[in-house]
Image (cartoon, rainbow, N blue to C red; front, side, top):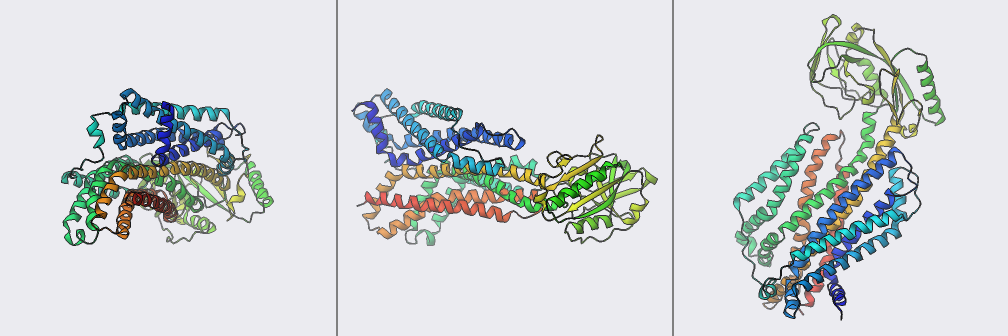
Length: 634
């Protein structure tokens, strides 16, 4: 038998151990390859949507490649630690250090090349499906299958380089040590896990502080809190697994009524060792899972944008005539004609808008002019959009800050007008948006009808709103008047305009693209997290066999064995997922500040989907683990 044959058979004999690593690597190659198929497809048209899709997928390629590098490095280092006894046997039979390094290098390259070929083969078979789904979500014409040579070269080259570097690096990690140390690596008694009360408290404080900051974040404070919260969560999570969790288990051991009950002694006693031994793995699974949950959950919550859009864009088409030129009537007539041609049922309304000059203001970035609309017109537009107005009519100098989006930050401000020294002050905002933010560059106020009549009539513009519940039918309308659904107010243009259907289509296309990319990256991260658990589980299999074999000799029944193993596996699988769920829940609470409507339903669906997938994976691994364990106990 030649040396390469020996390496090949060595890999095949350990196929159970390498299975998760191989499949996870192949899946990463698959996703990388199908992204490359999309990026290098010759039929992708040059447009804003297509360019954005390519940019997103290119970014996803980079993220996935870096993650794959770290994933492979961790996986290989885990395998090396679990194979010390095997290395000891080989060296006892005459294997040299250089031969051992060569064997490890060839094994890693063999698995890597196999993963590359498998991933690309599956990618070729499913490429058409990916292109069809991807182009549909991106919002471009369906792309025919095209096997890009550049996609093949990029994928093969990138991952060959990755596996080569990792294989070369892992030969440095191989430590021959003394033979006696290699043989006893898996049999040495484990030291009593030590825990620091101080670091346990630090972990609890950091996590609680990060949760509090996330839960109380507002749209304005979120950007400032994001980095501190993420940093505290990562550090707190690490110390949670290395210190706090072990501290909690030790407290459970002191509770005799719980500790001495049935098989709890075995479960809890080994739990402290498992938590300490697997702390880094739990930490990585938690962080990777949290990233996956947050990425997919954040973009899935964008479905709320449908309802949010109706709130921020009350009119399907908004048009502001900035002067009295004749072309405004032609533009409005064109809009009405297109609405009729598209069989859109609509209603329309016209209201005057006044602009008054500001002498001074307490605003952080004061404007020279102030947009004014009367309360009766504000109420009329709100009712036309289907909103219930609960605000009481304004009297005398009472005002409301005019929101142009629910994302807008409201701050009480005082304005002193040039006209007759009138001073206006608002300490609350309007309940509803009546003008989309694209139409309004200045600050705006809703004032009483009495005050509106008193204000200057020199700068008056006319707003025309077309209202319908079928905004999707307005997509693409009046393309000669707007660019991508909007015409911003400027000194060069006599009008400002928005087409909600076009804006909604563009926005949803972007979110669908991001969701599509996030789903695939999330799947890679989630599968990798499951692989980490698989590695750790089978790395401890030999130790568990000896432990349970000893216990069965003193009367442990098959039913009790199933119960103990199920509990320990459940803790191994669901503790990091549970912690990731908690992290994600508080992250979504912070995200909620960006939405006027609740995103709870979308978030629950995403987390429930991940949980179901984890349960399926748990029962599959539990079945295989128990079967392998019991074989050695017969």
